[in-house]
Length: 164
Image 1 (cartoon, rainbow, N blue to C red):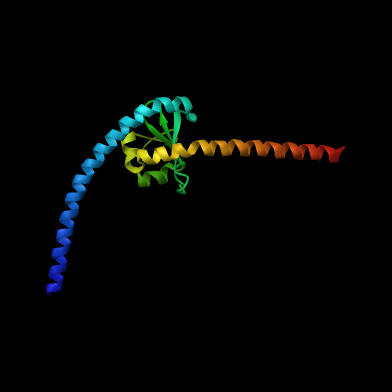
Image 2 (cartoon, helix red, strand yellow):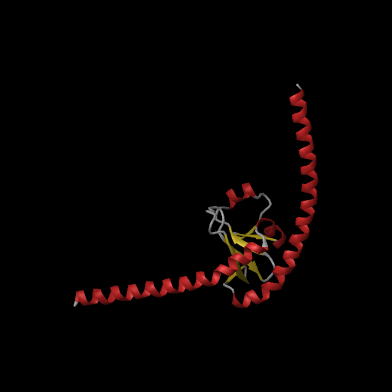
């Protein structure tokens, strides 16, 4: 019986500590996210000059992040930052997606959210890691495209020789 009482005391102490830490860290997290939002706004303008642009809702948007390592089926892995300061990503199955995010703001197949909300899930550090990897990804894509067309040209040339 004493073991059970000790267990309950331990649980109570651990929960009290957790509740304190959670309250403090939640406040700190909100402050950090607010700082990240301001920094994101500062880097957005130069990113629009060098980033990959897609027009979404008649506004230029830059590729900001790619969830490529996660196999997402309800949404696109590509996340954009729009000129209006919103985060946008494509939703493939709105009905199923709303089961996970009932209050999602979806317009023409695109989920729209404030940067504060997105930064709760993806830190500015992870965004920078993605952006840092992007140049080599683009170089690799360029090389693959050249190789693809070279192979295609060779096939056409060979086929023409065979059909002569």
